[in-house]
Length: 96
Image (cartoon, rainbow, N blue to C red; front, side, top):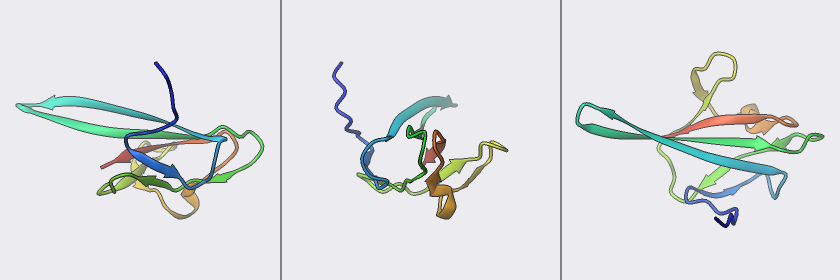
């Protein structure tokens, strides 16, 4: 399988070119007769020396973009200082 660095979901990561990389993970589950799709995106700063600003731009704007807290596991806002990724840091985002 050829990897082109293109994504069905993302237009760009405003932090600029690599070292920012991302991985998109999705899963579906059944609730009664309904199948629901939840999409999560993991964005990782692979630069081990510098922090980078990351504001993902989507091909189709999501209704909501929430961050999973690495401390509590709760969903929170992905804005402001949260959009800065420290060297080697990643963030798990729920795309709604």
